[in-house]
Image 1 (cartoon, rainbow, N blue to C red):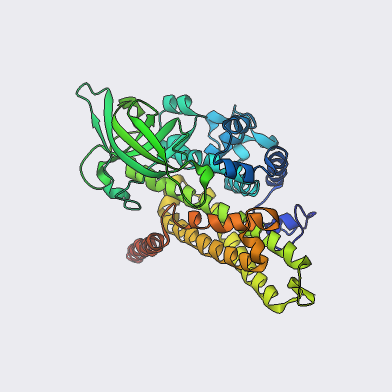
Image 2 (tube, rainbow, N blue to C red):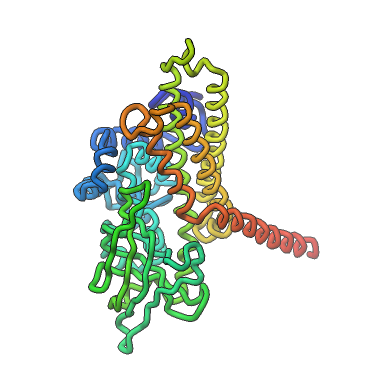
Length: 429
């Protein structure tokens, strides 16, 4: 059974289920959410991205508007809204118990389509899940919906989380930790009220890492890091100098920080994939619209076989990425957080790599189709130009390509070893 098309009718500008084609994943509540978020973003933030980018920041009052609209609860929730949050505003008439990973996918798909508004939520996206899953009820009540960021990466150990050096030393009284060290490339760090920070409370390696929620206390300093794209992400270099943090801000117990970080990576990497998919579709939409009207050598661009070949190449990659993403979203929804991390950690790593590869390919092809417009920050090529600058932000954060490819293969081999052992045990019964 098909439904009426929604959104743009330009080929590949929308996911296939938007066009009316059947899908096993999407229900009426997913359609209601899509309609609600698209209307809301277009009413509140249409055409604001360029202005915000020029100013280098999203206005602070926008965060409050998003909170009042119920967006923050859903962004922090991810694939499921906890029972204790059911009293919060639930958007589009969706019951808290109905919310799933596909609602999360749709929410981000539409927010990214809406422009720079998505940038102010990055800290909440990556910082909220460990708090939601592992923190005490008192901590949860204290911080939501304050501005949170995740502080993991350090100047001397990017993807090598096991060897981080920021220390948290328990005071003799046992009531506080003294935190010293530095974190780098911390998204939303300039504007955050709280830093969910990986610290070393014990010996070397993963077993000595804990997670500590650090308010913006005396001794916490942040300075901006300028990058070519993603100015709205408020990227920061964070320094901790004898910061006195209540011991009650420890997330669960000492030594659990590395596992909490690894569990969180599935969602972070999947969220990067969501951004890549909509960025590709927006770019293809604008490039196709241009190709249908631009005349070159007596014919429209889209009438040139080489241009159609470019669109075909982009379409098969984007639709393949969409299908793989939907499969992973479904599988994560069927598994516990622990099982999802164990079985799909390597899969989401490889999926995130593919998103960067596809995003880079689509950006390059769309810029070539748009010509000079694809290099211009205003006008018909503005969204293509913006996406082409964004692509490195899809490739490096969450683990760079080479690191994640190696991780994906190692995890697959690990699962093979476990499966072979299980088969052998079963055959010996």
